[in-house]
Length: 409
Image 1 (cartoon, rainbow, N blue to C red):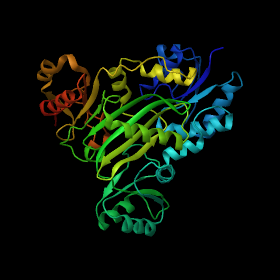
Image 2 (image 1 turned 45 degrees about the vertical axis):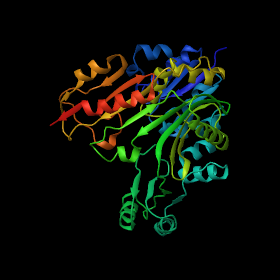
Image 3 (image 1 turned 30 degrees about the vertical axis):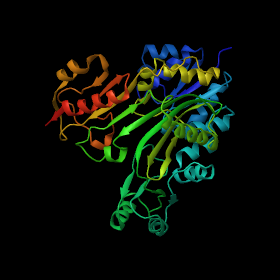
């Protein structure tokens, strides 16, 4: 009998369909639950689905549970999967209420609530920033006095750097507390600022054991990248994960995180800093990374990474070995000003220099409205490259940022 897997929101964003494709390819019978009418899914996606349930809101546990119970009245649901941060808690609650295996509510809560997460990790011997979750302005002021500035303020359940701000003194702290609604009933996370280089460690884990792992570096760190238009930020997935001894500590601590948070069969995403205070872990996710980082892993390792995830979920084992053939990276290209795209300079020069190493590029057409800098790495133009040598790839990405200009008016 094929495994019956329910997958949350199969059509948006666009790469969600890859998870459905992969589940179908490894023999699962897939039911999709989503907010779009089935007529909007397209023939190919519909061909991979055994059944589809349209609901008004996939983030509502009540709505989601009704849909899952309708499916359970027809088949035995073996897995319920969600790969978007906004969906994971609703999925976890429905798993528990409907008796479906997978990441628990408690583990999902720990991945989303920053102070609780860090308290659990510190107890397990994983170094991370001092932190406090509170809705009390005086309590947050006292924390700032104890820890000192700079300080990081963020929503308790933020994904990545979303809604995150750095405050450097009392004046900025007070402005940040007001902006984030503290004193008006909103609880936030305050964290010690950890200086250092920033990266992330991602896995596909099976029963709490790492089946595949990847390391990616940010240049510069995310908060700097999201603050300044003139920066063309990069992130690079390295192919030195198994050969460079510097990654041993990242991998060892990452495995401690998986055990401490009781993450079983799931994709994981963990951000880390390395600097004067040593290695510290930051954000943790029981989901794949964003900004299509998995595309870099697939290209760099000659694998269908979505199929590997599906093999983990459906069959409890990997099916492909990682080649570590390439490092692969993305560079975000910001327009010189807000407005509408007018054109690009330097593309032909880039293609002559690095043509064989260009994975793909996204260059919105003339007249396209620009997106704000804080929109993220893929908000405007971007280019992705690969190369067998990590240092050479860094050089190529730096030259790309210096050569290609996005003109706007």
